[in-house]
Amino acid sequence: MTKIRIVSALLAIPILCVAPSFGVQTATMTLTGTGQNGVLGNVYIGPYVATINNIPNLQVICDDFVDNSYLNESWTANVVTLPNIAGTDFASQGLQKYEQAAWLTLQLLSPPTTCGGGNCAGDIQYAIWQLFDSTGQHTPLSYLSPPDLGNAQGWLTQAAAHYTDPGIDYSRFSIYTPNLSDPITCSGHACTSAPPQEFMTVSTPEPPGLAILGTDLSALGLLVFFLRRRLI
Image 1 (cartoon, one colour):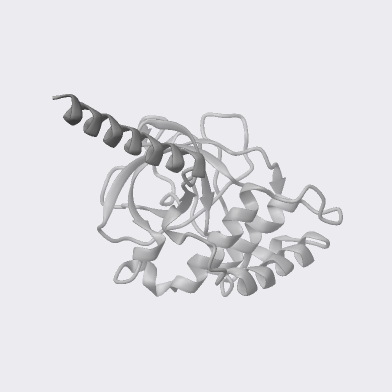
Image 2: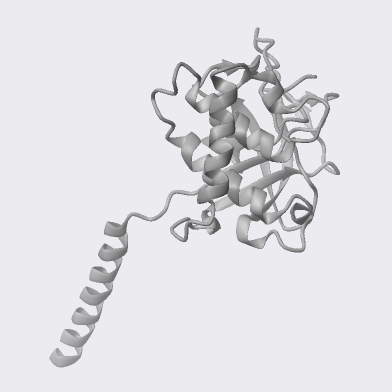
């Protein structure tokens, strides 16, 4: 089995991810980096780095262990926010799985520093992959040995328990699925590899201070308006 490979670099260890298809919004994507969390089970661990609609250095999380993606591979992705997957091809995977993957994504973006000798980020990443590929011939967790195997299973248990947390804003999560009807290129040339993978992003919530500032500025604007009316 192959995974996300590094093309145009002297690296042969895979990275990975997968995708459904549907028509919502679209975005152009280029995978530009493997992330900073090393390798586990001979696979690069996310978050990965991508350019989306010409915005560079965005963190993206892979949610599948089936297809292959390569550095400098570019493609068009169909995009949907997590609460809006009903009626799309995502629905076949189940909203609950995506919500659990979203909870795990939050943990992956800020992983623990110690995991009993395991790769903390890697264990979370494999838990995400296991959500969507648990019945294949080579399941993600079959690539792991203790203590990472036990840790990844523990993360799956936690995701099942915590994904219903009302404090999670699922509207912040977007899923990027390759549109296979559009060209896929590797370093600017035709790419003959398997389809790129599916990725998830999470937007940063607006800091409360900015919202307060916006309210204060609105109030100031109204005050100026009324003062001007009194002076006319």
